[in-house]
Image 1 (cartoon, one colour):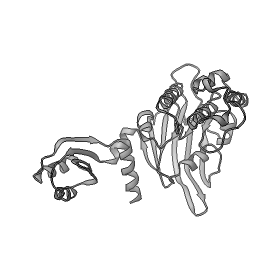
Image 2 (tube, helix red, strand yellow; image 1 turned 90 degrees about the vertical axis):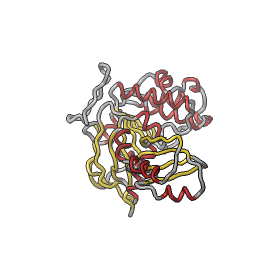
Image 3 (tube, one colour; image 1 turned 135 degrees about the vertical axis):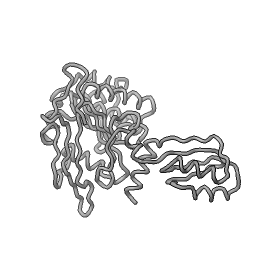
Image 4 (cartoon, helix red, strand yellow; image 1 turned 180 degrees about the vertical axis):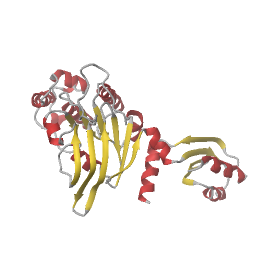
Length: 315
């Protein structure tokens, strides 16, 4: 993986001497008999926007907790810019937006943002932070009177109250409407373009597909896949076949016998197959004497690829 550089003078991060922003080296974390993180090794670089994916219980939250120094690793090493997570956080080099933890109540949005800016070692002006997060219009509102989507935007404001070189986001757009989500990711692209590293965990796989230039897939605390969205899709090794077919229910039994199938759905006359060898499957489909209409063969989306990879791991 090549180190990326900032696109504007003065905006570049200061990674470790080897160019690494974040490194996990054989990291393990246990909670009693449960191993949440299992020998995890990975590295992040300047200017990357990285999506962290995984099913529930895959170890995403534990990984972020270790990264931010909220919990210690049982074994292995976690480093940020060549220092410990705590040292990087105290120096103001890390901004975080987490699901856990509530916001202060009985204060206005402006007062909360001004406090965050005052505490940051390298703060931005509060008005700039409010504008960047899109909360200027609600700056005078009490925090405990906000909607879920507004709370998320305030959390984002707190995460970007100063010049942080690494921004960590846990399910950042939960509760946001479509317009707010688009504005949020436009801001994140700008942050990455300035050389900052953005790491986000999400259940919205279409966001990971559209936004991330690198995707990490966790399963059972291990790194199952690491690459671009296109590489993750290719690794799943399956393609989607869609067509319309009229005929009796007996046809469906024949369809289930097609070679290389990894998935099957039928809704009325529309059939959706998933195949590890689409050419062979389509050839066998015609050999059955069936006449599919509107036949389409396409690669899997990131969501289907994610399901296929994690299902294979479970198996």
